[in-house]
Structures are given as structure tokens and as C-alpha cells.
Amino acid sequence: MADENTEVQEGEAPKSSSGGTIKLIIAGVAIIILAAGIAFGVAMLVLKSVPVGGTAPKGETGGKAKSESLGTTFDAGEFITNLAAEGGNRFVKVNIVFSFQDPKVQEEIENKLPGIKNAIISILRQQTPESLAEPKGMDKLADSLKKSVNALLVKGNITNVYFTTFQVQ
Image (cartoon, rainbow, N blue to C red; front, side, top):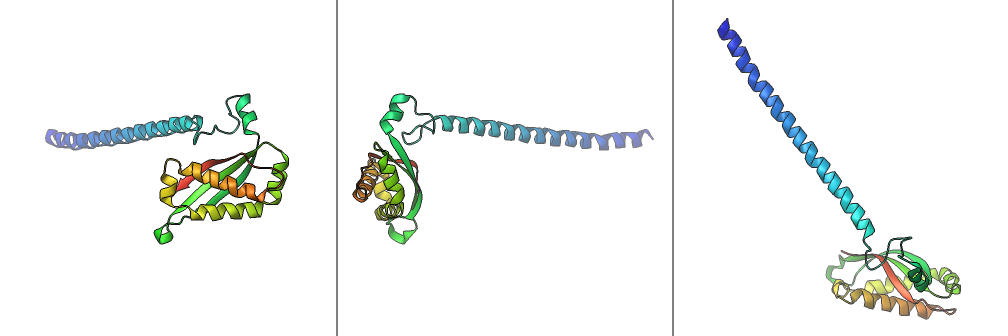
């Protein structure tokens, strides 16, 4: 009988040790997932506070002088279009915002928005991934868009073109 009890105890010991190992592995995985979640949350907070593309997040212009220098702004919207690349499988996705000093320009932009959007798409389709990757590529594109839109306006001109998002794939 003592041998039988010894065998049962020896048989049970690996089960509890195995159960403890499983619990330890589960706890370790849970800690790793928790740490990854915390790191992701901290990264998102940091990214929200850092300006992207030289523009501050909405409502955070950093002072009265900056908001006055921008003047009035108009969100032209999001544009997704193919680029002039071999194979035609490259595209650009941008959000464009215009700034101008004369508030009358906003009404004119709203009235001529279909023509303005057409001009924007035409200019975007002429771009190549290489030209947009150049150090001054976005500046050249903004200048080209500004000239094209100003050619359509009569009451005034836009002073700047801002890209609030800019992706090339």
C-alpha cells in the first residue's frame, strides 16, 4: 500500500508542477500584452502632441500670432489619386487646406469647388513618386496647386496650401 501511495503522489506531483508552469506562462504572456498596450498608449499620446508636417494639431496654434498669420482657412478635402508611375500602381492620398487673407475668397472657393477639385486632381496625377520624394517635392506641389487655384479665382488669392496628411504608396 505504501508503494501505491508513493506512486499516486509521484504521479500527482508532475501534474501540479505542469499546472504551475502553465499558469506562469499565462501570467508572463499577460504581462507582455499589458506592457505592449501601455507602450502603444504612450506612443499615441506622444504622436498626438508632436506636430506633423510643420502644422500644429487643431486648436493648438501655439499663440495668437500664428493664428493671425494664417488668416482664414478652407479645408478642400481628401484626395486619393494615381500617380504618373510605370505600372500605374502607385497613388497619393492628401488632405489639402488653403489659407487666404480676404474672407470673400472663401465664398468664391465654395462656388468654384468642383473646378478647383478638378485642377487639384489633374496636378496630383501628373506627379511621380520620385518627384514627391525629393526634399522640395511637397513645396513644389504646393506652389503648383496654389498657382492653379489662384488662376480660377477672381475676388482674391489663396496665400498658402497646407497638406494635413500626405501619403504616397
